[in-house]
Each structure stands twice: as structure tokens, then as C-alpha cells.
Image (tube, rainbow, N blue to C red; front, side):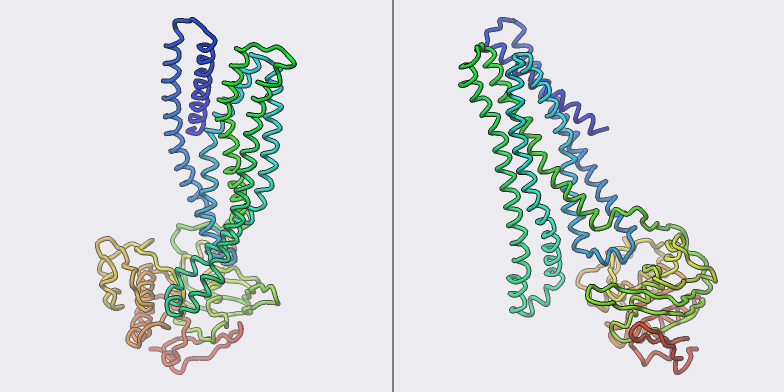
Length: 523
């Protein structure tokens, strides 16, 4: 509605501006009407009011459009299956959320102004036809040749700009690597120089060269297209009078009107690159696979009751370009309420993949996941995922407590047990996530998981970066406390000195599962 109002006001402003041209033409040709000055002032006021109002509405439209696009894209990303997002990569997602959203927004926010310019062109051509139909036809022919030349240049430029957009993904990827690996770069000057001159700058240079080529062709095509209007004016002034008689008043009206129409025509031609960038952005989003016809549903419901969880001959395979890839499984295991399971295995044995299958983040390629004796179907998986509080080995930590009801006594208990009292603002629930050691980061993540209070807890090598004191706290206080509360705990671990504390012990070797009972069952 706002866009239609802005376009209507823009069109009214354009017609009022064209009215100014006709009034000027009448004054130059000696029209003695006494009302001419008042009409001129009225037209100026109308142009001012309609232009300012249209631009204010346009600002609101563009910001609302950007917010809506970001929200819709974020919901698509959240709803997308995790394997798809991992395949796409964080750098492409960030580039899409920033660059592509801005490109689409810029094109859409300019649409009302383009509609107004189109209205001005139509009215201007109608006025030219009133002055002289033959000259109007000649003007339209020249404009068609100029616009056709411009569109040809746009197609040539588009080839470079599409590749530049792909290059932008690589640049964002390397910039993200630089920020995340700044300690490693600072600690090794040779690595830093190699990264700058062999990785970052070549990618940036490739993007820059393609952008320069594409934008240069666009600029040339734009100037060439506009030039045809002035060629038409030259033909009108110097060639046409040699073949047909035309009055000075008609020539003056034509020149003034054509010169004025260069502004809206320039606006339309200037919008076409923005529209082209938007089409590239939309194509990029579609290629990333984020515009899915069947996204996963999110569930805000309470997790289902939990008594037993079973994986029956579950498999999962990672595709590889050079070979068959890694396959996990077939895996069969069973978990009951209040049970503690430890999972061990070497690097790359499939432990984290097993955790993602168990928590419903991955869908098994074969086999079944059963909850309380019932198969978990696709429609059940969003609610099934609500069973789990999870801390992954490279998990993200938000800067505030989200999705939990803060109970002060429970919060203080876990803060004291984990030794992170100074890392949480008790008044606001914000987490002080800056300047954290890896151990503190994981203890805060464990705090969030414990406050989440789900039936099943999955810890992916949580204790790997803790000092001996907090390792002991985890295995001898946190895990038993969760068991006493009736929680099921699955801990991926290498700490063999604590294996005896588990009810069951499983070992993964090259994606296959073996069961080895603990030395001593926990009390």
C-alpha cells in the first residue's frame, strides 16, 4: 500500500513537473494569460509537496522491505536442514544475508520512483505527439535505438557481475578466516604474509577486476543510450528543417520537453543495473538451496515424554567428490531415562555425527530412530529435537540466556558449581562472553544446557579443554546430579580414568560401534 501511494505521488509530481515545462513553453512563446505566474507558483508547490512526501514514504518502504527480507531469509535458514546449511557454508550465508538482501532491497525501494518516471515519459510523449505526431514518432525511434544499445551493454556487463558476485563469497570466506584466525596470523609472520598475498588479495583482486569490467560496460552503455536523445535533438534542430517546415514554437517545445525527459529516462536506465543486481541476488539465493518447497517445521511445544530412545541399524553417509566418502553405521543402541552413556573413539570416528543423529539434527540414510517404542517420522522430528540439551565441541554461545525461564536459586547453584559467577549478570541474564578461555566458554555453555532442563543431555567432548579441577567437577558432580534428577546423559569423552562412572560405554572405530562395559558401574 505504501509503495502504491509513493508511486502515485511520484507520478503526480512528474506530471506537475511536466506542467512546469508547458508553462515555461507558453511564457517563452508569448502567452499573455494573467494567471500564468499563479499557475507556475502552484505547480512549484505541488512538485515540492509530492516529491517530499513520496521520498518519505519511499524511505519507510525500503526499510520495511529490508527488514521483511532479512526476517524471511533468516526463517528459511533456521528451517533448512542442517546438512544443507553445512554444505552451503557460513560465508555464503553471511554474504546472502548482507549483500543479496541489500541488492534486492535497493531494487524494490526504487520501484515507485521508476513508476513515476515511466508516467512522466508517457505524459511527455503524449505532449510531444500533440505538438507534432511525425516528430514524436522520430523521437521514439531514436529513443528505441538508444535503449536497445543500452540493454545490449547490460547483458555484456551482467556476465562480469555474476562472476563478481560468486567471487564475493570467496572474499567473505577469507575475511571470516582472517578474523577467526587472527591469533595464528599474528604468531607467524610468514603465514600472515602468505595469507594476505596468496589468499586474500588474489580473491579480492579477481572480484575487483570483474566489478570494474562490469560497471565500466554499464557506464558506457548508459552514456551511449542517453547520447541518442541529444543526437535526436541535433537532428531536430539542424536536419529536420531542411526537409519540412516546423515552427519555432514547436521546436522550442520539443527541445524543452526532450531535455526534461532525459531526467526520468535516466532514472529508469539507472534503475536497470539495480534490478539486474537484484536478479543476480535472487538467483544466488535459489542456487544456495534456501528457497525450499518443504522446509523443516520448528516446534514451540514442550518436549514429549521420555522413557526410552532407540537407534536401530541407523546409518549416515558423507558424500565425497573424490571417492565414496565416510559412512557411519549401522548403529544400534538404546537409552533409558536416568541412564549415563559414555561414547569414546578416535578423531574422525563419527562421534559428533552420532550426536547429531541422536539429537535429530541429521536424518538417517537408513534405519530407524524410535522414541518410547514409536518410530520418529519426519513430522515428529521438530518436537523430538526438543528432548535434548546439547553442548557441541564447537558450539556457539549467545550473549544472553535465551529460551529458558531463569530461576535465581538454580542459576546461582550452577554458577557456583562451575566457577563462573562473574561471567553472568544476574539482573539482566546477559553472559559476559568476551575474553573467555575455552574452558570458561564451555562452562557457560554447560550452564545454559543445565538451565534448559531437557530430558536428555548430550555433551560432545565437553571436558576436553577443562583443567583437572573442572574435569572432576563435571564427571563426579554434574553428571551424577543430572542422573539424580532423572536426566539421561550421553557424553562423548576421551577421559578413560572416568569411564567407570558410566552405566554403559560404547566405542566408535571408523564409523562402527562396539560395546565395552565400564570397569565398575557407578553407584
